[in-house]
Length: 283
Length: 283
Image (cartoon, chains in turn blue, yellow):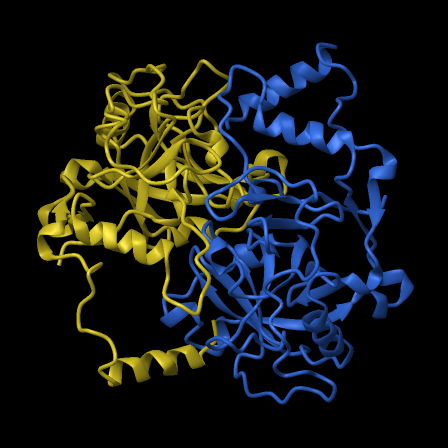
């Protein structure tokens, strides 16, 4: 935790004490492209970019809404209007009165659980919330109780804000957990994505002490310049991302290396939100 | 998650649908004083105050150092010099070269585990890291594997930065987890306290992209005006805090209400870091 660790790392790099590659290192084929229309590019004032991968496979109705909202430029001049400490950052239309564009389903069906998910698929250990949890082959944090399966609320997951149940929200108002204890939102809020770049621009915003962390004055909010699907951006501006596939022995070795670290540290376990699925910009 | 929930709350308050008190409500006797010399008052530039409760009972050697450093005013003109996204905020002497005052044990014994802790004491469920975890009667998050017991690294816990093991750090450099996955530090770093007020002033600071989140330039760091034990402050400036004791049926009812919430939400479990032990300013 101290800078002298940097010196230690330098020393380790200088001395050939460790093999050049580890069984837990991904190979090129483990990096698979994320479709451009699964990437939502949020541009905040001050040229701060946040990129979300959309869970098109797991929350299709809400993702359809989000794509339509982005294509309608509905969020342009929206804002990040809520920052509740150890809880969430939330963005969209702070007035919650702006009419939705045509084609939006205002109350889509709840997508709390994943229909038809093969719960026998390889998943990790039990945690305090489910019988098993882990990262799906296509790079999503998923928990199961042996019957249902669902996307988990981890740091940086993107959920759909809503009124009281059974309303599930249209997707116009979105939030991300910025603290530690979001798993109790599992299966109560629809997860539609996860932030794969720029989370620091949300997590580092000033907190509000007003009710539910809503900024008390509009001036506190962070303006949103635009939200676009990457597929709608000009080719020159379009970011390309890849996810690390988990259906290979290298990923299994990575999990082991985290769950059973080398001495002299103590093996302390690992949970689904400890292992944010790896995503990178395409090289 | 939306403002109309506020309207709902107002409605519930207006209508006598719920009893005035709940079995999970603390009574006055459940609030017990935190000794003034267990409170560390950190004043950041801009009149931002962060208050730490020190784990005097569980990490006595490190807390003795921290008390001596505060009494020597050693941290005056120190800074918050490290902000690593989804990991830690760290403060102290950014140069790590400032001499320690007399009376400081530079390498105290590791206090990763709690000597003589009665592991049969009531603790909660298993999690991904331990056989059982919960909040001790005196208000600390604790995990046990049935043999050892230890303070957990939750959001807002205060740990002692160190070089490589077996060095455990003097306590001059401290950090707090600002993200989600700090439990792997359990039993590898000494926990000396937890932030009981003002966490937002650390969690909301700008992140650094430099190595290990160390700010690349001194101008990015947040100056520390002073760090004092509350017991050393003039009586008029001295804050008084209380913790909520857990050795009573009201706390057990609170845990149940969190682990088994009322319909229509789904019971999703609860873990030790989901239940920050309650602390308040003395009324």
